[in-house]
Image (cartoon, rainbow, N blue to C red; front, side, top):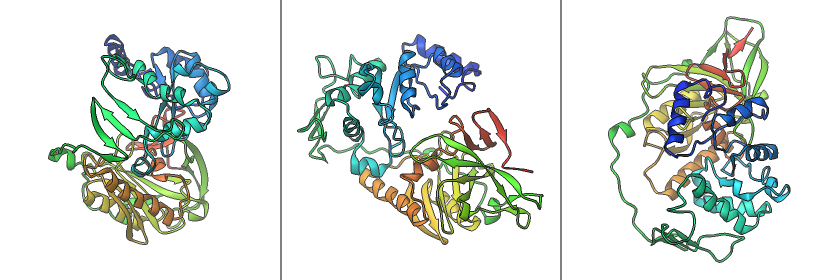
Length: 414
């Protein structure tokens, strides 16, 4: 379910929700607005049964008070457990109404620190009783999605999914049993993973009209006087963005990136049909201090190609490199490739082993840092810049979107 106002006005969405409910399936929610007033209550009345977009204590409290399940997430960049878990530990709300989740975990995070076990350790550090935290990520989840007859507890008739650990507080999986079979022990796989041959349509997903040039990233303006630019503002460790405005001076009929004020260019390149469409804009918050660019085909939810850079030539190199890679993420500094992870399956997934993907994905984070970015897992912020259902300002293949007002806005005004 999308941001209220979009979903509520969409007949097809309401029909899908009705079918979901009639099939005894769970209707998932997605409410990123800070407005907990009438709009929020209308959203809940629409049928959403859970939500993972809460970032502050009040978000968790109000969701549960309205009969929803509050999903507390701890991904690589979305750190929302600590700010909301007080609903249980301080306000005494029923922990059975809460679920622990991740939402966007970097391959390196999973390989190095773990996945749900990482979330579990973090939640316990925030004051949750270990057994309560385990319950919030097992039986709570299974019951919420209507599969507790099959999983979520160690009981007769359920799948024999069992994890053994020596320490509930510092939880690490010593032995993992899935459907009765030991699949991992002391951090090592004990079974062979099946191989799968992916079809050409899945591995040939990055389609553009032709090689991109530096001129494709030029933000042209007619004015010779200063103009007001609408700029996407990145918020560290959170999914929402800010709608910023900056006064910018045109030079030779165009607006350049402004490294001194941390304003870089952003481009969305249509890559599914090869239309040649490119949407340009500006973004602030990455802190780049060099001639560089980053590009990604992971760009929720439409997954076009996103390119962010301080100079047009670097953006062209990054985009063209990504096309040749078949998708993924790349970092370019001073015209040279310094970070790369290939995601050849739809430009979103890899068929390589997790440790290999983690190592390659790590070069992306290193590349960000080499370009001056000090954000925690900035590639997560990058991947959400085109997510037009979360406030405040996003980029799409049709232009800049003011998500709070549900309208398109120009890149520059004046």
